[in-house]
Length: 143
Image (tube, rainbow, N blue to C red; front, top):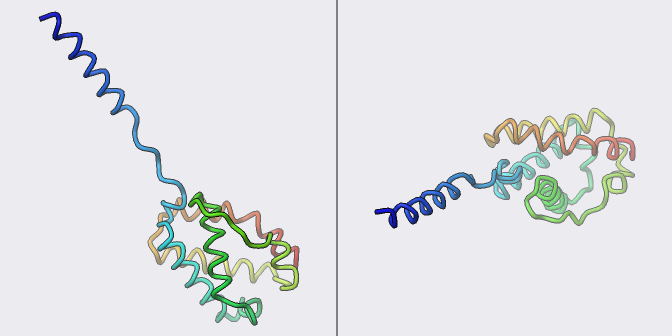
């Protein structure tokens, strides 16, 4: 009888150790909905911004499909999705656009609304916006 207690105890300890390690929490990119959601949100945001009187001036003459792909890649990289952003730094990319603070804020509002429309968790959305906030200085000041 004593011989069976040690293996049984070892099995219980091993199973307990497995149960004690929960799976890792999903990264921000996954919490945002991954590629399908992020890509759709970016596409809708850019389409809106290109037509909105508050922001459309900055999109005049811009290849929207190229911008869409670049921003999607950047959001993937910033949120831990495994992408590598290959575009220009924000100051250089926006140097000739003369973007005003109100234009930047309007675009952020549109992005927020599109994430809401996609039913993205508020915590994930706010975490992404927090990561993007430091870019305002480079984008607006560069203009």
